[in-house]
Length: 116
Image 1: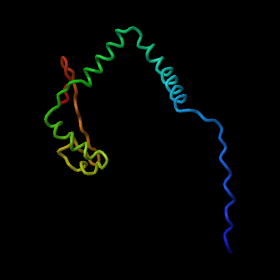
Image 2: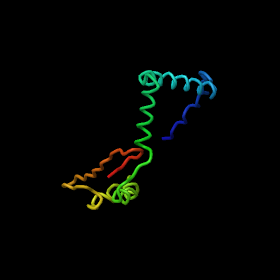
Image 3: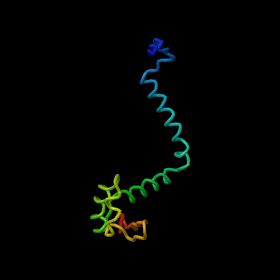
Image 4: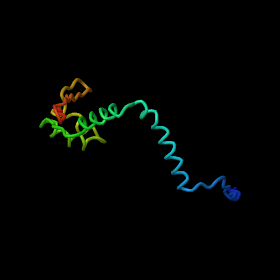
């Protein structure tokens, strides 16, 4: 029993050719239209100023507790393989069976954000 050859593949049919520039313009228009509602919801410039100031305060200069500074690289190294850090009790605030908890508290101070 020999296998029959497959029938020849038909030539592809070109439906429409769209240039990169045209597709980029379309994507830009869609993105700008999608951003209109949140921009209108912010209202006056003072509301948007408050939003940007709060984001700057939250993600701007910050202080970290020395313990958290020591743990941060270990968590980063174990992000894809958490079992390396799972059984290390010094990395967690509390452990209970198969549950591990790390509690961080953050608070704002004038011009800085502190993680303890």
